[in-house]
Length: 136
Length: 379
Picture 1 (cartoon, rainbow over the protein chains, first blue to last red):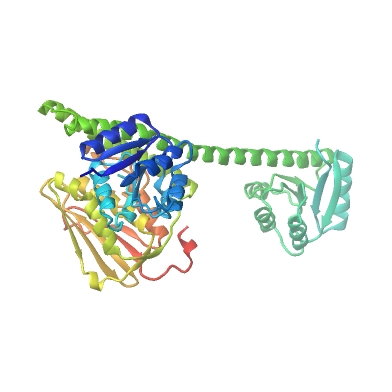
Picture 2 (picture 1 turned 180 degrees about the horizontal axis):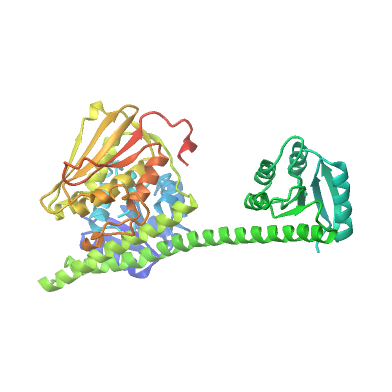
């Protein structure tokens, strides 16, 4: 049986590696992308079960990536959890238009990160939606 | 001197007007035109059409007199410099005129052509300087907000990396740890959390002053919000041996009109505070009850409470009680200030229940059950 595969899209090398280690330690297979373009191509070739997506990215922001995913029949149902350093009040509503499965602010607590990922993978509706503006 | 100046002389006495016009033409270079109005109404109408570089204003007009004349001209045309030309030598009136926004006050029967010209020229220059200063000030404020937002955003990613790597070591994902090492890393983790809170506050400060906080009210089930927020804090509460309970009669509770994101931010803030100030073994209860045309939500804890003398002040900007820093989980003292802002913008109220007989503290807020008259009420 194959493991659940998560695509981590993050342009900061250290954080990308840190998240990869964290998710690997939690039993997930991890593939990586560092910019918007490869976020789209990696999603097509790797077919991840979930995408953990940064918003401030070179080569097409996370919002553009969300747009591309929602335009692509093969990707439109892949759950996306957004993890961003941007002001949630400024961008969360825009991000939510794409029906993301979770919205987290950097640095997210690991408990919460893993909980949101698990829930997104289980396909449950997203009761976390309003909580995403959490200051924590 | 730049283009020819267009002056507006507001004077009801034809002879005074002729004299002043003659003075201006004699004493002042660069006068393009001098228009005259004999009433305040006429003057305001002329100003409404624009292209007036300065106003010479008599205070005694058929339809207005005294300081009120200045008030009307200045408030409707704050960008046009006004020089008062008065027959009345009264220092206190002159001072008040300037306080109301007039640039100068000259006496008709004492002024020379040169003086009058100088008064008008300087009035125009001063008005330019004021406008430049105000433009610079608003540019600076905007730059400050942009800076805060940028810094806050840029700090988050490296902090998230630090957080991730420290936590990987702390929870032994990358190898076993001794007790002493684990203790050290827990201190590091606590401080990382505190930094994250402070960075969040920086952001809040910027956006509160720039007004980017948008409220999108929709029909919302408060119980769902409470449930989700409480479940977010459950792990932190258990870690601190604190019990959180929800006491809501779901059937009796009407839906409210609120922005779920903003309301969740308020609830998260209150829960975070409650946990921060409640010692192990304590408890936190969240209640929601219908209250006239609103729903009242209360977050009560069994913590140390708020000092009597500080109860009015907890919602102030930067307010922190002495000892807030002890737990290492404090922010910049903006949490409750932001809560109040967010709740009031949604048409609700927030307060600290001051029942001194109760232990701990109890924060309550209301959210309307009827749709706000117009959504912009929340802005």
